[in-house]
Image 1 (cartoon, rainbow, N blue to C red):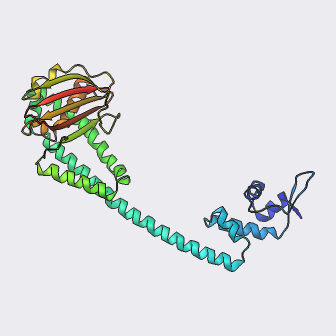
Image 2 (image 1 turned 180 degrees about the vertical axis):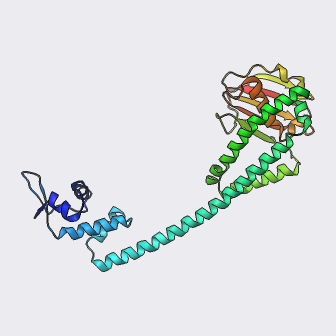
Image 3 (image 1 turned 135 degrees about the vertical axis):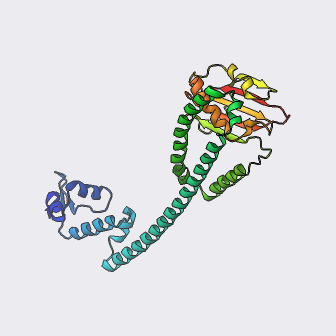
Amino acid sequence: MITIQGFARLCGCNTQTLRYYDRIGLLTPAKVDEWTGYRYYEEAQALLFVKIKNLQQADFSIEEIKALLPGDDDLLMAAFERKIEEQKQKLETIRKIKRSYLEEAMDMRNIVNEYMDFVEGRMAKPELWQELGLEGEQEAKAKAAVNDMLVEWISKCREASEEIARNMDSKELNVMKEVMETLMDGNPDNRSLLFSVTGGNENPEGEIPADAQTVFERGGWDHVSAWINEIPNLGNGKQKYFVFRVREDSPVSDPGFPTILLAVMAIKHDAMNGGMNCRIGLSSDGQNHFTLLQK
């Protein structure tokens, strides 16, 4: 009989490993002294230790090891072959996932880049800046400040594209492609929501809470410049929601407008503090409407 210390040296392990094997029922000492509690092993148990160690290294579960321990070497060799085949199949599955991920990540990057390039191009339209009452030197200063912000926003969107791809299945990706195709066609339909753009970190989905309070409203206007300077100061740390319902011919329905609006509000009112969301849809009465809510 060998003490636990001697058996550990024989097996090239430590006593904690042997106590763990005993606790989970893999390798029980041949004898435990009832007075001292000392554990003793037989030399023949060293072969069981070798089996256990190698099966564990081959990724067999504890229950699988328990079932294989009584078997001979032929049984163990057959088990190793099955494990090899399982690992081959698992490896091939991982390779397929890797290929699929790379393809979807590339698609998502392309969609994000295409959208951002599209929005950047639309923002060059002078009528969008005029819609906010920005002209001349005022427009030039605003554009410089807005572009600085947009560089950061666009960079974050592009970086996020791979994370989106990791959590998006093929069906959702196809929907994204269809949305982009519709956007590029320049033919908005009568959906209640045309665009939703979010800035800031809070409530990234942009859904408007039921308890959000209206703080400013305007209706029946032709251009945002008629009332934009009446908007109260927004640097209060609350989430802001800019909700538009407009005629189809309004510059506000342009995809570049919500990004410009949020950037201008962030610069003018420090409205990024707390987060912002701009939602734009078509009106049902042929009039332009705006509501500012916050929570």
